[in-house]
Image (tube, rainbow, N blue to C red; front, side, top):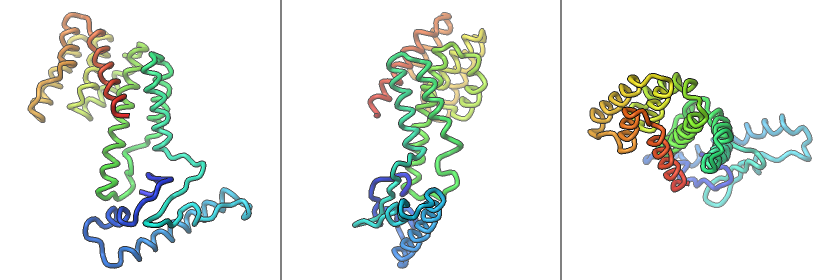
Length: 248
């Protein structure tokens, strides 16, 4: 919680709720203070290792400060993976908007390389962090979607086939990924498999959500049948970017 909200005050109430939920023990405040002391000890050790001169070194209390109502983690000039991901993916989105697909692919690939697995995979999360896990996963999927779109625009369809095979199995109702998979298959001379992928996606949607594929995906299917999928996928990609812009 403190690292995720570095530079901002995290209230005692928020930390207590994250650690113990709606029914904290009577000793919650004292236990929280103990946890903060333990964190400061770890921070102090890290500061000693990075800055040997005591006169130049920050104190653990200045890094993890007690402020009215809660605590504040002051990362100084440090950058968290979350902030760096947001910076790089933002550069990638802007490059996509400008039609600079090589730069978009590069920035988005660098952003995604910061992920080594699910967010907070080694942390026991409470209700608040669970919401953050979902939010971060959605931002990762958006960046992944746009990186694949940039690679498709650069003609890397064959390179994407293995990755998209895995992704469409992992996210069986993700229409953008299926649309990209269909286009990559079609461009690779595998038109029948592209149409089979559409039918598989439709089956997944109907079975799991009771929905038909979106108009964009149906348009991709029709264009593949007519051997003209590019226009449909370009329209779908433009719609995705517009949604991303509205969400920023």
